[in-house]
Image (cartoon, rainbow, N blue to C red; front, side, top):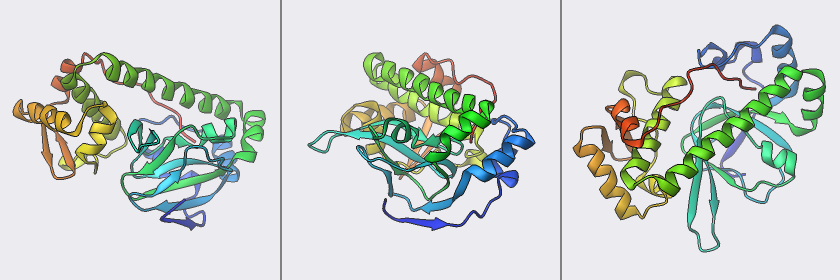
Length: 250
């Protein structure tokens, strides 16, 4: 792990800022007490830090409290495929905890703060709090569902459909966790990140994004993407959007 700083438990679970967001389900007092005991602390990571490495065996689970990141796999020659993006409320490290080895790596896009949980406490969680155990199962199923849609995009959507899907998908996710207020840009990413997600060359990606700009659906400025018309992006992608329901988090 690089460019990270361990922190003491600074935010009590009962005061967790994620609990104030409408997109997350409410926890019962007993669940909050359990999570307070389960949580071992927090740490911060700078933008560009590697949180978990493919092939590693992490003794911890993490919930993103602040910031953006992404999951990816790499080929021996350095080519990279970004699998999905990570936002506040997302759980990471479950794969390495249950299967003893990470099949992908995780890098930060912005400065991040994460809650830390000991994986040795997972069995007690499933045993003592079935509702939280169900939440972990739900989060794993949701990640699979998102990867299904991403695979459809890379395999069957055209270049402009892929770009429209990715940007509208990230726009919806970001807005639900309060990241698109006051005309904020989508996330601090480059066109290389988009290229590595869409499975297109950088040149093709640049031309595709320009088409969306010409239609006044997005505005690209430096490392920032401003979403101007999410509904038309969804229409281009043939995507109905994320389910309008409250989701769990740990």
